[in-house]
Length: 595
Image 1 (tube, rainbow, N blue to C red):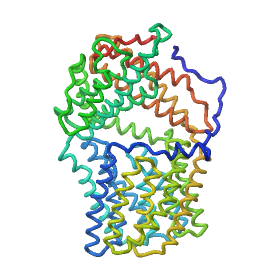
Image 2 (image 1 turned 90 degrees about the vertical axis):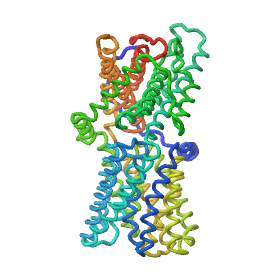
Image 3 (image 1 turned 180 degrees about the vertical axis):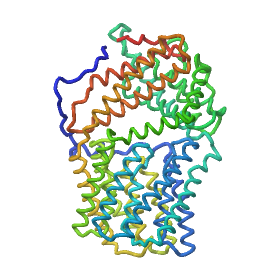
């Protein structure tokens, strides 16, 4: 298969993707999935991080200040997939970012009472928070928590002299949330790395099992069936993404320990399993059952399994150490900052999403204000929560958010009498819904919203009781208008850069594949360079698939170079397979140029 770029003879545009119909489309968007394997970690963290400030304020009779401590407590939701060394920096950055957004909102609220100005500042903050969270890839929950806090603070009565004390409450609660987020390191120092490696092993097992099924179904091993052992792009791409995530987690985990050394060896075997073209001499590492057994033991609390040594493993581990040293050096940190600035630069594909967020949030806020709704920041938050990687995902989120909020107001109406029994009952209800939101949201966003909505409404009760009918009516109106105007903005503001991102990813994949091929062909190349080139190729394939999936859900843009994308992915995975005999116990790989 030729790798020559396939480009259309004349520019074309793709029309709006067929949005889900009322009958067929709702089911996929609202279908429940299996819960995340770590759903309980953010759920428990946010409860612990919130309970201490809540109960402290309850004891001193200042529940009206909970909105400020909650801003810091919600920072405990972030960073649970990161190793603790990186989590410490990430959550600290989240706390500072939360305080910065809150400071802007409080200062604005103290200087002006103009609803038009407050809505404009809220929309601008939402757009900036969206871009920064996407660029730094912090999340979940991403920018929504930042927007919720800053938008609510804009419409809270404020004086300049109160701001330092309120920010101190946020920073104090954020510092406690930071401790809560890092506390599991005292019990299980390599917990995030173990989970990342377990996911890589499970994804490799799925890939190997799919390959085995195709092997058994292949009638003849001739040239026409050369790709019969191919596990399919879906499983292969998922395995590549999981292995890449495991390597990144291990690289960011800090100095090597015996446990991390064993985890690195397991990732070597997982990588060998997903790039192997089929069974062959010493292909035990591609045994799906063995990979699953290793994954179960890695995820558990017992010792990490010690896999048999594979040829090239020692060289690869030395390469990991060298790469870790480069990343931690001054030049490595500078390169990371330059990459972040490129994602935020003028040509960034995130810019259209920022414009969508700005226009959608502003329209939602102004429309609700024009209709006399007392809390337009709810509409701003609703609109901001819709914007996902592309228009199709944003449509799904619109359905999920609307259904979840409407059901949530019914839950609020049922629980409101209980929350008004006493201040302690109100605090307990908020803590319960905070836990329920994180426990349910990984099943589907709409299910989590059913718990988020009553929690957000109950927060208003800390400042004094409000008429239930008024709260429910305002929330329903804000939800419907925010969702409608938010999605309208997503439709009108097209992301014409999505296809350009695919083309850039294609060029980067071609360069990474050429570099990997050179290291395979040259026996004089140091093992560390070969392994680094292979991991760079894996990362480029992951980025390519992400860019392709994002562009596939957008509309009104140049036609995707789908043939070139598929050819680049297949060629890239063939190159990965060609490296397998040099470092793992997998089968004989086809030549790089094999069709």
